[in-house]
Length: 225
Image 1: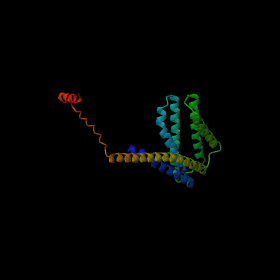
Image 2 (image 1 turned 90 degrees about the horizontal axis):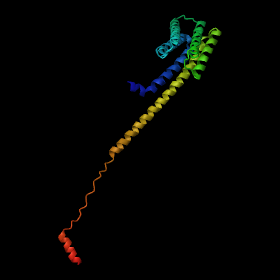
Image 3 (image 1 turned 180 degrees about the vertical axis):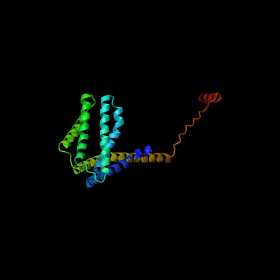
Image 4 (image 1 turned 30 degrees about the vertical axis):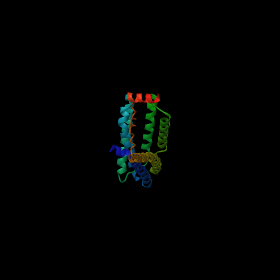
């Protein structure tokens, strides 16, 4: 089963890319599921980060901070899913405040960990978390945002993610085709080798040397004399 998924990974990647684009378009057309969609994103990011993050963090203070951040993310995700499932859900500005707060919290925890607790950092992490913190502050400062705005943001993110996953699927499919072609060429070489008759190399026959007896030698000497 593992070999099957590894061999045909490109199929699942392309299906996932198509689903992402479809979800992004659907969110723009019908923003009523936006709360549920964002809530599921927070749940997935929170739960999947929990165990690896806690196990690989030796600092006890950071473990507590990471755990608190994940609990807040999961709690916000559950709240959005429940509220989004209601018929007359009307979060309005609270929705924007929650998203802005989650982004600000992620940026704050990252800078606390890298500045005060000596967590490893690089340029990509620094600027990405700086952007998250800035966007979160902007959302909170302007009093949230409309669901339509977030719907278009999700559509853009869905398209970018789909392009990335689709390109990864393209590379896996290309490797699959090259491997298949190489396997077929190898089979052709084996078949050609089997059809060619084997050349049997025989040992050269030993030459018979003429044995001269003493009597014949005397006769030859008599003739010569």
